[in-house]
Image (cartoon, rainbow, N blue to C red; front, side):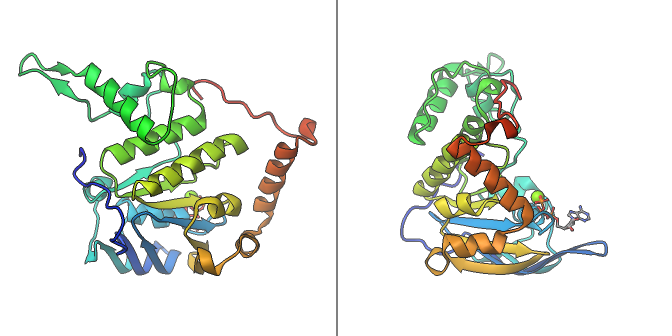
Length: 286
Ligand SMILES: Nc1ncnc2c1ncn2[C@@H]1O[C@H](COP(=O)(O)OP(=O)(O)OP(=O)(O)O)[C@@H](O)[C@H]1O
Ligand SMILES: [Mg+2]
């Protein structure tokens, strides 16, 4: 899995991933219909939509977990049908799920290499190359602008935002060309969300195509180059940044839940009505 695909930078504006008229039916539930989506190197494509709109279904198709029933899924211009996430990963399509697959008690560097440990020495004396793993983790995190005091600390002691950031740096290191992030800011406070948005921008700078799933039009607008809004499984809006304002995007998304979430965030920013708000805690290991 190591660096088979290096992120293309500049020039190539061809979509790495393209969906054309994709549809998906679960039994008699129609989850998606007529979805067009392009993911280009060095661009962030935001997928927005209310609960049940089809966001997760869409990324499950792109990440190889589920298969589409209609339309076409192209990678580098060639039609594909991915049978599992491993096949997606081999094409450079990596997904960071919300419940990050980390082992909380293991150090940051061990988690970085989890499942792809570096070893040294000939058989039967092969052992973990701890020095090289630590050094590489340090280099890769630094390259993304992530600075942790101590790579030995259990990953569970990092904040939610920091853990997301490590997961992003990990995907970049292991050769992702397309990075799918499923609601990476959903469980985070304002400041931690800012941290994650910064690394989404860093991944874009490294030439990755990013699919950023979110409920939050403000977060989307801060980093997005393209916006696709899903409603009841269909594309309600599909527009480039030049063609849409934050206000329009917010209006498309303005359901009750979103407004409540926004209000919550605003009151946090301004520090008003704090007593009314639930406490935001970053418990170690949570
Ligand atoms: N495995 C499944 N079997 C049957 N129906 C499903 C399945 N997965 C999703 N659905 C249905 O497809 C529709 C889209 O669901 P999906 O999970 O993609 O929405 P979502 O936009 O990710 O919502 P949320 O914001 O709540 O995560 C819903 O009506 C859902 O009930
Ligand atoms: Mg979902």
